[in-house]
Length: 139
Image 1: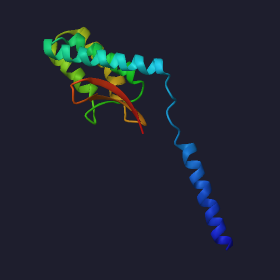
Image 2: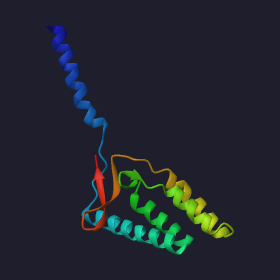
Image 3: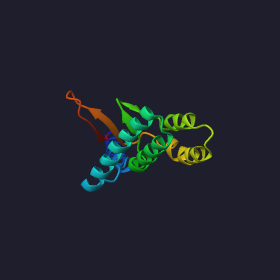
Image 4: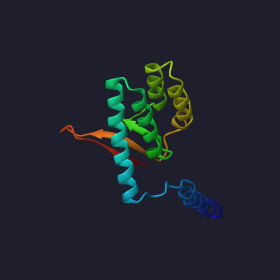
């Protein structure tokens, strides 16, 4: 009987400490969430513009905006993380001889490639009517 009580006590202690270890991300205020959502929407439009018009500066600006708005989380589209390093490679391919583009891409690459999927992330979501927006999703 003592063993069963000891096992139960140990089990309850273990289950009580798990939530304390797995801390959630700090909650963002509605203003911060709206600002990040707006920034990501503009960055997505800038990314589309840069690809359509072969503008490497637009791509670099979009990556910089996404890195700043993501704040340590990933940005996903259709359940897959957006590879910001690949976007930087596109910008370099558009202007391989421009030293300023190369330097800015190298500066942004360190910040863009250290983003890993965490508890919360930004996902680009579209509904049936064609309305698309960013959603901040947390597990």
